[in-house]
Length: 70
Image (cartoon, rainbow, N blue to C red):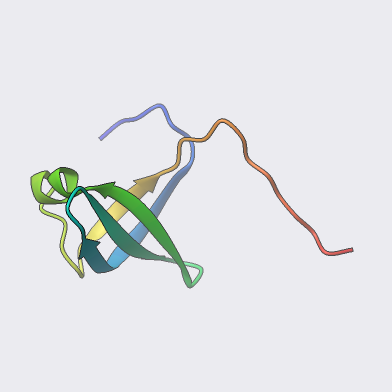
């Protein structure tokens, strides 16, 4: 798959919590960090996402911030 977005992270789905309209998907990435994304239940079902799958997280943001403790 080719995509123009540069902010791409590969991780493993560790859990999915489906609500009526949206689903919360927890993704473990290489640095042991867990990302949580909220997507539609329809998207989870259409992509057949399930715990243990390896997926790619694409981040699209208009603003990115960094912080450093001084």
